Image 1: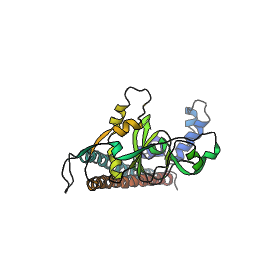
Image 2 (image 1 turned 90 degrees about the horizontal axis):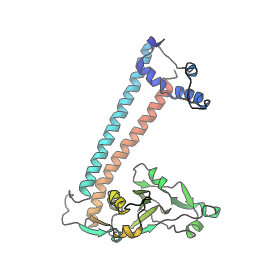
Image 3 (image 1 turned 180 degrees about the horizontal axis):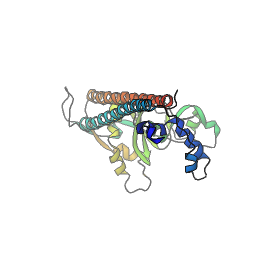
Image 4 (image 1 turned 120 degrees about the vertical axis):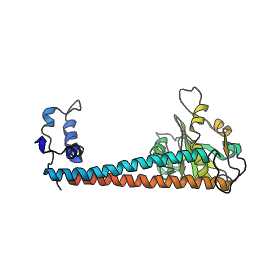
Length: 292
């Protein structure tokens, strides 16, 4: 009876894996992906006594509250990081112990800028080897995380030799340069990329992590260089001449990168906690809403 159902419990039960599987099974049999009301009436829920329903609803609501709190804290930490990047990467705020004017330099003076390439997709000898081969999908899958540790696809040394792809040393900065422009990552392993990248191998006097953060703030500037092109792409010639301001010493670059990296680590720890809490909620729903 509806008067015996707690609204909070009903809301959770309708979102439970048990109920969703039933719904999807019925929907899969429909040509229009709809569930007729007659079919919906046959779907089942496990309904404990009212007092237990309320207890279950409260337990799940508590977890929802924790998730909401974590979401708000992560958003706040991200805003703080953006503000810190705006201050520290422009020289508006200096870290203790550092002074003096920043330099205006071209990107070509900071790093060896290398392109990528794609071996023939019809030649099986070029694929599934031991050379990591990065595509923009690998970067978007990071969802804002800094380090790229592996790639979905690989090529062979023969594929590398037969294309314009190059080996990019570990701890360089790979950056998307077509369609989606300016998405960056630090590769923790040597790899190659497809032609949708421009890759920065930092010179000795440049801190690679600082370069990553600096490039991450230049996305709009890079896009403006593409002009009115219908297919956005930024070339090596444009990037070599692109000017940025940066500290004159590598020590200050490293210190700035350390502050931002610490903020990234804090955000990553919160995101990991949020992921664990979501997993916990799913497990609770699986157990509590099925009577186990």
